[in-house]
Image 1 (tube, rainbow, N blue to C red):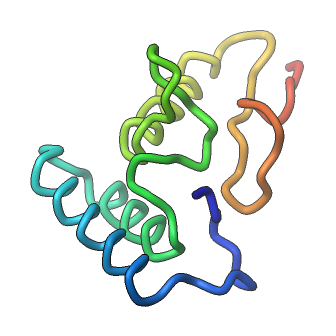
Image 2: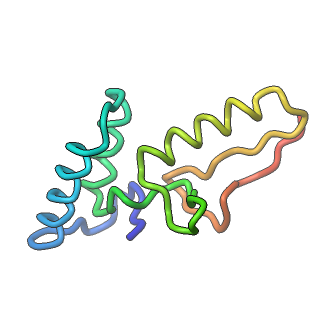
Length: 109
């Protein structure tokens, strides 16, 4: 369920919202420490009808499953930092406009 942050989306209610909020509570209790912006982003992501076990960056773990939101956000930040000084830099897909594939574009500096 990758709904992104779309103002025109009819957000879930009832059982789906309750299940997502329950999943969020369990995840927050078991994950460990969050930075304030990670917690805020995670809660917004779930409020938009997405699972904590999905991410807007299309990042997957070694087993082929989508990374959870917080791990993907951290991985995207690491990828950006690693590529900062490279001749070619990849930009991670925006949550506002879903794209096919992991990276939007290849930018040469």
